[in-house]
Image (tube, rainbow, N blue to C red; front, side, top):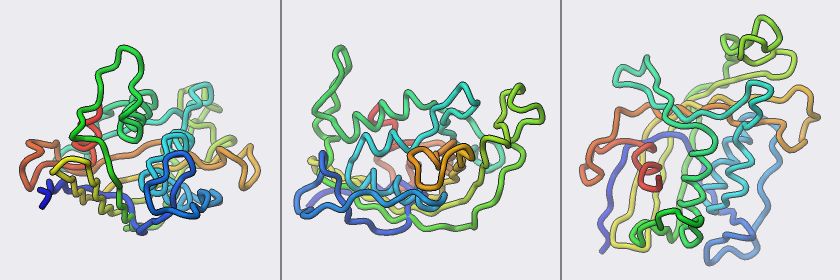
Length: 231
């Protein structure tokens, strides 16, 4: 019987069984395409599908990466009080981590290989909203983006908290169960038509758990701990 490491986490609320064409797990036939992204909730649903199907391209496409318009993804972790936040990494490191998580067999030249114990057999994800979406007017610029903030004529930013239950079934004898609360900030590109690619993007993802300790402990951390395994 496999050992299971429990990592408190948050963020993904519907159990998904969809599979992607290029990275579909066994038993997915036929595999439905990702849903249309017509709302911030659809964007988070797409994030869950990207995890469930280990679809690197889908995951990367959901993250904001438009620095010329002050919209570039950040992954953050809250301190123990939940009031302060520390930016851990940005778009480049996030997509690198997930490429290694979803495609461990294909490291880049010169890159350390992913340990065989971390190769995944499947991911099961539940993602449940805890709050309604609220507009983040504090992220808006007062001078059309010259101050480095979002131009409200271009972007609308909203935030919601999700509780997540995530099971990563590895090819080793140890699996990882994550439960916690995550905060997602989703931006809408007001210059794009509804349903267009990139209409909704994930601007930031905040892990609300305290800093991870030992992965072998039952009180070991959060989503950050799992991501850090693939750095």
